[in-house]
Image 1 (spheres, one colour):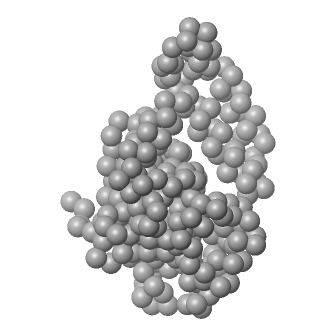
Image 2 (tube, helix red, strand yellow):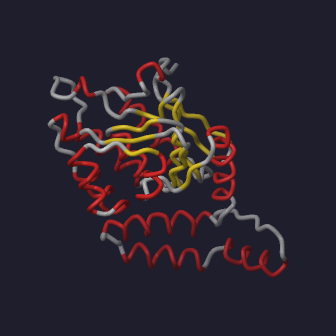
Image 3 (tube, one colour):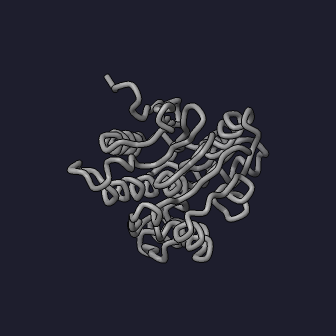
Length: 254
């Protein structure tokens, strides 16, 4: 049985949710949490019926990142392992949503940037204290900041540890949208339903290609294979038929 306080995975048909459940510690992640999260993501990747993976927190905060107290200790987990986990989240098979219910700090900001959508609330804020701590951030995180936010914003956040409020987070592209706090859950449910209703082969293939393009690392052979796979799929025929018949399509992922 999972220990209390560890990130919790729940599955509801085609939607998976990982919840950070350490509100008394601002939902910060310990070294052992990294392995729990890795196991959750690997499990979800193996579930072909799951098309959406969501992250959210309990209490006042979304997540305050990696446990700073463990840095420089004899723990086996550290910044490189944290970076590997966030790369795994970016590469996750399902479409990912960060439901940013509150403050998001440190490495958790990179976790959000690894997600495909980031829905926030008016009271959320973020900052990246790496330079203040003497921590040189890992490659994947630096690349995500630059590709998602642009180099000038990345420099501002990394080099000055500036704190941004929700409006600024939206302005620089950290958030994809802001909703009222009591509308966060319904909005994320609606977005999840929209995504889960798309044709899986095209949906998931385009996600991977777009992320690769953002990194300047497009696998053109893989892209051509996915285009051909979608073109020969029953889902494409179903989508075309539903369009002609003015009805909702029923996709099977085949």
